[in-house]
Image 1 (spheres, rainbow, N blue to C red):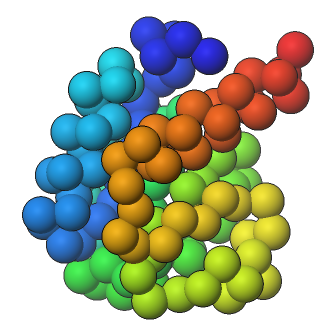
Image 2: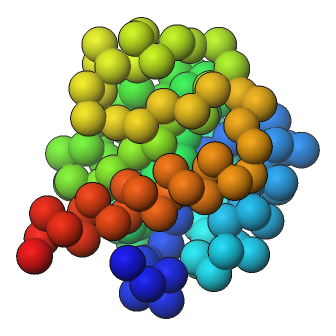
Length: 127
């Protein structure tokens, strides 16, 4: 999928150094970023204003666990990449079997590969 046609990538991450690094990495690859959002409430508001093409979510944000937001995103068929340092892939798969999980610290190249892979899978599924 072309980055220009990908739509926005919603980023929810409460550790600001990681959040800004993540946003910069995704933007430099040509994607438009919505965020970073340190809390569920601001990320939810951004989602309600405009459905993103993809969401990159830390699991624990300033105001709680991101799973309620992730469920709403999944209901709208928004693909999710969980980016966590506290939860294992198995824990996430138990709640979101189709989501991608990357463990912190995640190298920028691995994050971009995951973003491109997930968007390519979505594009292939709609063809």
